[in-house]
Length: 355
Ligand SMILES: *Cc1c(COP(=O)(O)O)cnc(C)c1O
Image (cartoon, rainbow, N blue to C red; front, top):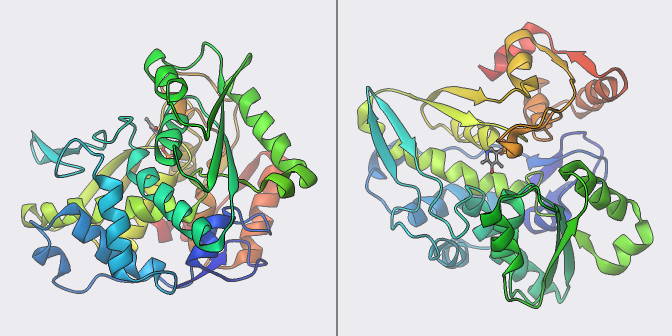
């Protein structure tokens, strides 16, 4: 599989380079050149199949050229062996045709374990193969930091530095991050807010010399591999519930738009998904955008769900690329306008492509 940038001006890469590059050099995000599709009958045949086995079939086309299904299978087994439920992401019936998919059975309880427990081994395998090392740096309000540390601890090819705002992460997550006995894990408690932490990471990335010397890298959700791993549980839900009715509708708590975009990919691959509902807190720029077609930035308001306290959701760019018929130049213009004016509108006929 080849990967293209949403802004159309970056080199086309294979899976392994996409994994290690993260953000494309033209400022865009990588997406597969074409969307693989599920075969008719796949979902019906998968209703009782193990999560891990479905995962291999869903992801194999995306890693094609970088590794085969057998090797992918080994990494997938390794990734989900740390989960405390054999179903990995079990479905519980709530009644009235409603179900809850439990995404908290990983080692840190954050749903981010589902992608990161796989991205950790993928990173390590590719770097070891190349004889390279990277320094992963990140900022966290809790979930990302614990899940990234747990996924990357004790990996020889990776050094991890995570910034968190001192006194502003939950006590459980503070301990999850700072009591890890691994030589490659480094926590920095910063006196300030999450935004100060993020600014620190950004300024480190902006230091070209340091960036090259230490091979900075990131494992946030702009990384395609994370989204790819999340597509799996939407397909699994569709397979498990195939007999319940014609199509499913998902409600997805949303921050950076990574999780819900993975649901969009599952639908694009042919999973019977009739609706994807973006749930937000008071920071509702996305809800307003999908209702009106206008994206207007407000100030970030802190809430009790800090992972969703976001105004500019990076992964929305991937959906815009699809809404604009994969025209990278149009996406670059639109985002340029948004950055300058703080507001931008998408015509209804484009937005309709999303629904
Ligand atoms: C990361 C996270 C989100 C946001 O997910 P996105 O993929 O960024 O939209 C929402 N809730 C919790 C608890 C999270 O950890």
